[in-house]
Image (cartoon, rainbow, N blue to C red; front, top):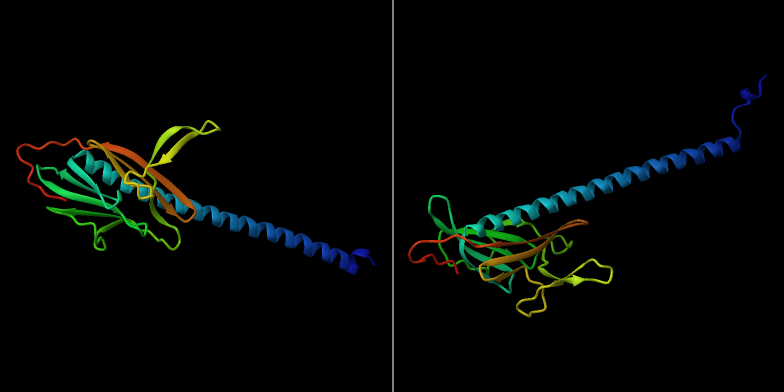
Length: 206
């Protein structure tokens, strides 16, 4: 009778169990890390997509704007925009306290930003989870001790809060952080209103 016919010993059984447990634990860890990486990628793609929508909306409109104003503690932008075919309309964007970026188009104004509940949502903010859009307008202020660029938040109206919009003549600067889950994408850009109209400007947007 061979020794192999006696089966496995208790020590061998324990070793098999330990090795199997380690292997299953490694598989579980790889699975969890894969799910986490996928969630982070999804969050970043979502934040990036929403930031592109906001930026493109502002850039396209302001390039064709004859005038614009910034209101609501520098969290709202209203512009007079020339449309294809020679028309004109009012367009407005606002960053709400709940983290939404909302957008409205009107054939004429004035546009009030006091109630934006019916406006189109470009970024759906969720203040409870920290998702949404947050003003991040800033200016370059040299470099820090490590040599990296240093940025200072812009608070144009002195209310202690970072602004979403500021202007210098006909040039608009805007800055936002769009957050989804663990991913935050910064939107920071500028655009000049450069459309012109003939005759008297009778369009009222604000």
